[in-house]
Image 1 (cartoon, rainbow, N blue to C red):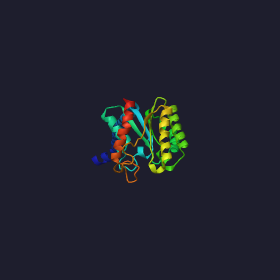
Image 2: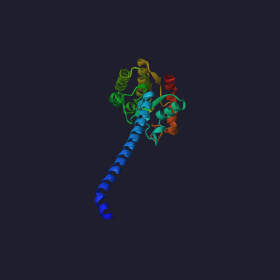
Image 3: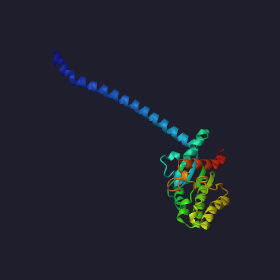
Image 4: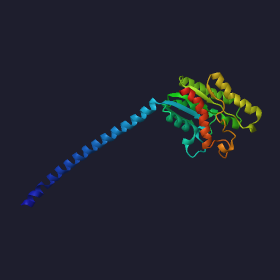
Length: 239
């Protein structure tokens, strides 16, 4: 008799159990989802706030800025400058926009896209032209391309301070060309009233032990010296 009564109510009992279990599971999943969503929003807001509040220093350059040949990009001079900024408790974020092999023409083509990323730039460091010189590109073209980049930054980010990094060529490019190449940067700085670093590779260029096997790109120790050279100019602007 008992067995018959149990059998007759068994389907109803099982359905009731399934309903209770399903309700509990849905409730738990809802709580977990709410918790995950809350954590995700907090994380996103934290990153957005950090990026929005900190003033941006944009390094726009070639392989020197990109840290070509280094095992860790954090050894490149822009990252070293970020470390210096952090150690001083200053509210600036460094953005490394270096591309190995970049010429002034490539930079001219790329600058519009970079500034479309809604980056509110406080300081713009322009480090381009070395690859033009090594390829023997007519200096009038190099100067025109760099001027175009400067004009674009002034138009898109009129409040940004522009720092121009000067470059020099090895003597094997010929005395006349190397001399005229050097003046391209000093003339641009003077004509545009820019903060100027005469030679970004000061105390590094031509020093065998501070350069990689190619004799062009700085080693880790070389980048430390470059960072000090750049910081000397940048420090006057941000403090």
